[in-house]
Amino acid sequence: MPPYNPFKINANFLRPPLKASVMSTQVAVAAGVAGLGIYAFYLRRNASGSATGTALATNMDASDLKPGKLPLSGFGFHSLRLHSTELINHNTKKLRFELPDPSQPSGMGLTSALLTISFPKGRWLPVIRPYTPTNDLNEPGFVELMVKLYPGGKQSTHLHSLQPGDTLTVAPIPELKWTPNKHPHVAMIAGGAGITPMYQLVRGILTNPADKTRITLVWGVNTDEDIFLRDQLAELEQNYPGRLKTVYVVAQPVAQSPYQKGFVTKQVLEQAGLSGATEKSKGTKVLLCGPPAMEKALKGTKGWVGAGKKGVLQELGYTQDQIYNF
Image 1: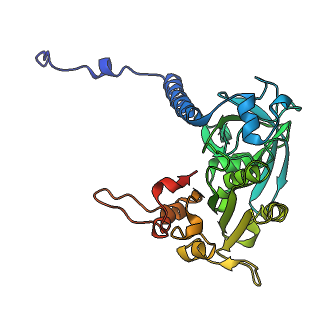
Image 2 (image 1 turned 180 degrees about the horizontal axis):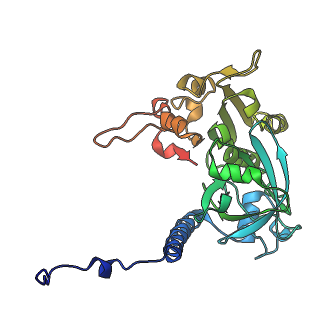
Image 3 (image 1 turned 180 degrees about the vertical axis):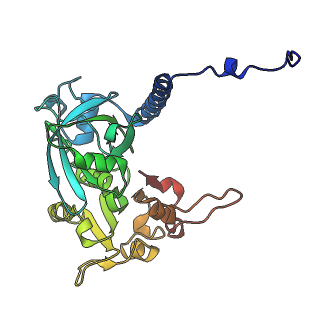
């Protein structure tokens, strides 16, 4: 028998055995607490939660709203029932969800998104992804999401599999707090599905009679078919002449495509009138949302030691405080 060692630590004392169910519960609870903390951080940035604040953000008359009755105007998780689905193109679906009160809007303000929470295929940890509603925020009774299906995408695959009558857990999160006329001109640069927060804001600005902000939208996609909001944007451009300018850039255009081929580059932005050095661009706010590679090329990178690599926007003369990344 070995001699007694008073400094030997019993491993079982420090780490008592746990059953798998207990470990799963602990991890799930920890994940939930962390998720709630992140969610609360998002809400603290801009959320008002009031009917009056919602009316200002969505161009509605506050007298038409019921205080405290707007389901997605503040903190909370909600279960929404899927009303219908529509295939928009080869990989994008429009999902239309019912709100609890068919007579009231969601209560979400401009640039708000929905944090979607699901457990696809029996997963015991949730899959959480943000999506921006694309229907009119003034519309009562419904909220719509346009979801692009990504190969291997856990949440997009799950959302595309939903059928009318199925439910989805969501939580509203605010993004950029938009103030009408704070900037004379806003430049929106989107890549792929990154168009959704831009489209929500474009429509919100143009349909607000008090907001005179000019908009230049540059949208880079893979194919012509990926411009799934083309008709809606064309209608806005026609209805509000001189307020909205759209530029489409297609990586793999079809033969005889009306759109320029390529990617969102410095030259493309200059041709769109978005050179930061020009007099017209003074006071411009730049909004950016797209794939990581695109955002990195436009914003640049921070170096571990010393200066990082300049991005296209910096080369054009924009400062970091002019740029907002969704």
